Amino acid sequence: MAALLSSPAVGHAGGLPGGTSASRIFNCAHDPAWSFFREKLQAATNDGQLRLEPELLETAQALAEQLDQAGGLAVGAEHFYQDLCSDQGSSFCLYGVVSVLFVIAAGIHSSVLGSPGDPKQAQEYLRMATSMLGLQYCLDFQESTIWPLRANDVLFNLNRSAGEPFRLAPRTGPEPLARSTPPGSSLYPWPPTELARSLSLAVRCQREVNLVPVGTHPTLTLEAVSMLRDFAFASGQVVNVRRTLGITYKCAVFPDMCAEGIDSGVEDPVAALIGRFEAPPPYESYTFARIAEALEVVGRELLSGKGFDILVCTSPFVVCALLQRATDKPMLGYLGLPLLWKRPTDHFDNATARKEFWALLPGLLARPDVVLATNNPVLTEQIAYQAPQAILPVVRPHARFTRATYAPTRLREAMLVSRTKFLWVTLGCALRHFMSNEYPITFTIANSDSKFEFREMAAHRAVVLVPWEHALMAFYEFYSMSVPLLMPAASWAYRLVFDADGNLGSTTSVYKDISDQCDQEAGCDPARHPYPPFAFASFESRRYWYQYTSFVQFPHVTTFSSIPDLLLKLPALDLSGISSSMKAFNDETFIRSTAFWRNAAKSLLTTRSGRHCAAVPDAPGV
Picture 1 (tube, rainbow, N blue to C red):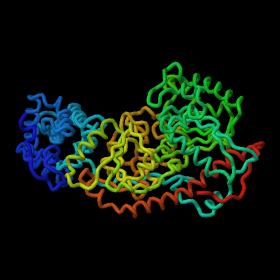
Picture 2: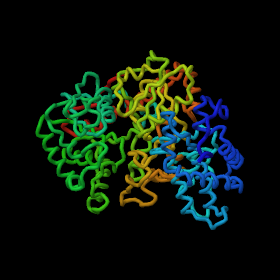
Picture 3: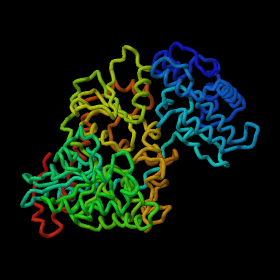
Picture 4: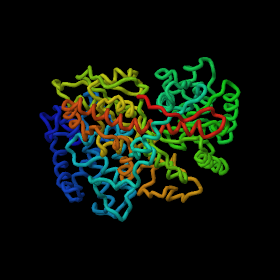
């Protein structure tokens, strides 16, 4: 066991910034056994190839045997966590152990250990290595060490076939994108004449316009409401929110977006139908037929009251589509979650229900008074893959509802934002091991339980955003406030935004289904991607689809490859220059987004007779 528990070290390891504790915890510095193994591993991988030299394999096996005899594998991650966050652990050499497991797996897979290759057993070792890095990779800081292997190398070899040897994960770029931004999107280069025409005309009605927002995510829904209300109509047009339905998440922070914030004491039937944001509804109460029946009742109630003009819906898709069918009202669908998120419970075991579900989207697309868009590029590609002729524009959130802009009055403080389970804790612990007492910046931790005003967040020097999904309203909010953003480099982010428990980047097939009108393997999209935009389990798939995220497509985001890299870059940022560049990008894309919202209002209210609305000349506000 002694060889597997690193002894105290002094100084810095490998030139990385950080004190004694960082060198000891992350690099197992000055432990002879681990240093010897690391040197052999470095020599075996220094040209980007993996060579399974006999001495390397023998060393890995010897270390593993010591670990097995001591029973350290079962408690090793916990020991590492204790040392990371309390300085009371046993100095477990976590990244050395992960490397040992990888080397042994490679040896077992290729039969160089003297017995026939056993890919199945090799995969067990890889899964063990992955589990050592914690839930949702919360202990995965290998980029911040001098160990030559990375978690991507483990990920790259998961499910490796028997006839193919283990390899290191590619360090080069992924395949090029199969399609650029769809027309009508915020990042699409609109033809100047089309842009000018779209901006110059806005809708004016002879009376006030009433909206009924429906959704589950408060700020996603608020984005659609605020852009439609504040920028889509002619100057002076009164636009009201009649009633909000469905939202129960973060009502304390955004009370106006929840039913009780609009009309206290009135039950929200849509929220009751959908259930909690993160929990699946009961089977019997959420079948396709039951949803349709419940929304018919909701539709009659909405129509029998004061009435409304536009349904503004964000999620779930099935609720949006069936409520539009029940009311026959114009609908703005601003989608931010997969089509199958909160799908009917009988979708996969009731052929009739599934057929009816997939008939909803073509029906909506055929209506001139229904406008659909997404808030992120990956979702647009998912929908195009699932349904024929369904390439939706990507309209970025501008988060004007923050009513805040970058004003760095707290220059010695940076905000660290991470809501992934446990990572916001472990990353905070890891940071302190690399920060000297003289480091000029402190961190304000923001997680799912934090409550900060937008102006307070915009007062920080910068925001370090560690993403937990491939599209985050938090990202758009900070970017729209022109707050300098630092984010993990793509090679690290691959393991953060794609996860089995994710809504947008799930590595399982929970959201994968395709209309029967299309090839069930190739999908509906003529733009053939090398990997389907679902079940992002493989390293190659993650690497390709991460290019479609706004994290990559938005300029002026500073990336860091490791914790030391973050700490070096944070004090040296050109804050004024970055913020000014972000603002310029915000302004440019806001013009295009406004064109979309103005065109949407025209489609919603001027394509059917009896609306008493018309498109009139009007300069857009700001």
